[in-house]
Length: 135
Image 1 (cartoon, rainbow, N blue to C red):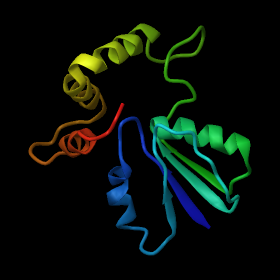
Image 2: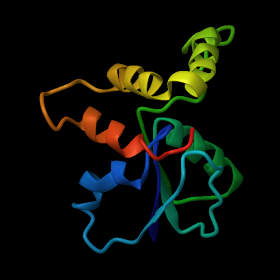
Image 3: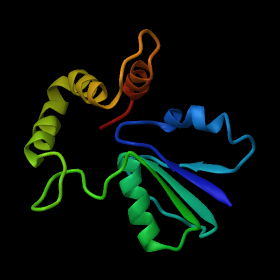
Image 4: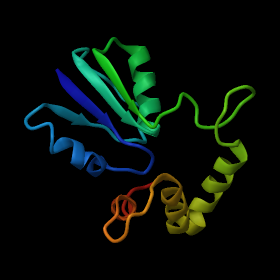
């Protein structure tokens, strides 16, 4: 059995460091948030966070897996008809601003996702990890 870890938007495998500390030698595979997940082995559990949860759901629909763990995920990010979510206009604005003000977009996104607790917060760690990630 192997755990396939799929991070959220603009995150790296580092977002799983606190989880990995508790897994010991349990086998894991890391996936990039920006690519669809290809699962070569059905003897696995998919673990997805945020956008990674959406990728995990899609991958599970393509093959039989032993289990799914979805953290802070949704089946659809934007609202549509009866489906709740972020208004598509907000996502479009965010995408348009990425080219000119990437750091500001990332900071605003992180502020909406994390609760700051002082120096060395998870938000600051996440932002530091996104500096070299292509969005």
